[in-house]
Image (cartoon, rainbow, N blue to C red):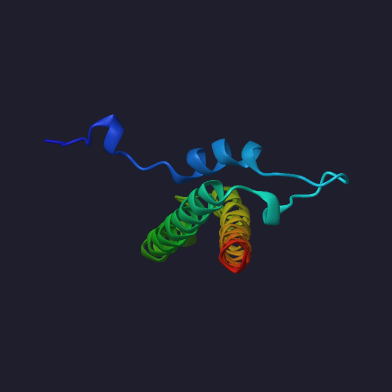
Length: 122
């Protein structure tokens, strides 16, 4: 018997992060300007970027464990090498995405701290 969480309890950090991206301020050159992005948006970006990074790391770890346990099936060809290759490319992309989320969270924290310090100093 499977117990499913209510839809409102399911955390979807990637979806939430993507919904926030249009709220980022940009400069005249079209580059993201975190210094002028509202503090509540920065706070939410930090939360969702960190959640995404954590989710990705746990998922990549789980896939690695599954692959390790499937070694015999991979070796005897039950699981095709094309599937293993596709998983390898997927893991590479997910790893890069996790690093990008981590960097985004760090940049948002830095901008938030600078913005908070500037407001306190005024």
